[in-house]
Length: 275
Ligand code: ARG
Image (cartoon, rainbow, N blue to C red; front, top):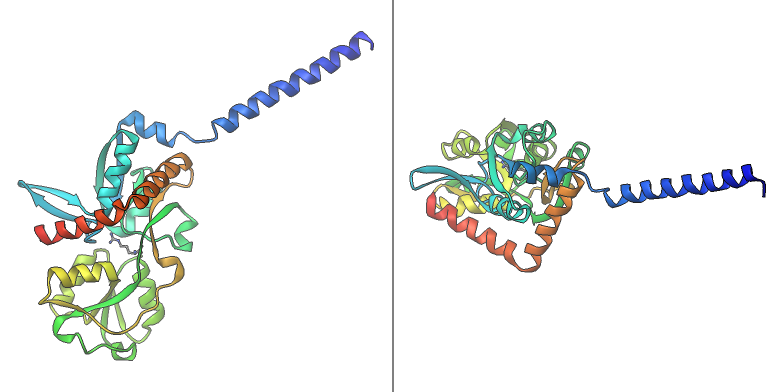
């Protein structure tokens, strides 16, 4: 072999080795900085909309207002796993996804289901609860709404930008759909007789009936919950893959140990205690 040729071969081997090392380095660091970032600021910031007992709701304990609930218990577990403090940011449900996209919060935990439309914008963790929709009505009208047609020309509430709003639009075209940013204003209007019903998820409706048995009931009318509107998950920025993995690990562990179910029960009891 000529000397120049020898040099060339060695050179190519060298370049190949360097390229290999660089690639290996990249793949072992393929996880992004999302977890480290949170650990550096020592705080996990979770966005929610505290109008959704038992998932998230405000209570006054020892004179100070706190946001508690099933989502908040899970949020605390995630913060603990990351070794950081938890900060909860309470906003109206319709602005939560943009808060996440604009880096105002690290995660959204708001009883949010992973619809195909939302998946275009953000990523979701594994599911930690399954839901379906019902019609919450006034207690004394419990037997008045057994069919979709019994709801024609009635004012029916649904929270803005939720899957309940889409269900109302698509399944109750003959009703007068009333939407608001806050779910609690709708349920108050229902109690006052301004609305005939409010579309809500069964877990939420059950909580209203249990907490205020003289005010609310669940009607017999059947609503269909689309497949992509059944799983409640944590919303994460698409870029934050490492954080999403962490959240999934926490959920899997809590599911396996039966802790998730216990947390849900505990959240329901809290709501009854502080109503
Ligand atoms: N699960 C429904 C959705 O994702 C409603 C969630 C409302 N959450 C709340 N905190 N108000 O669209």
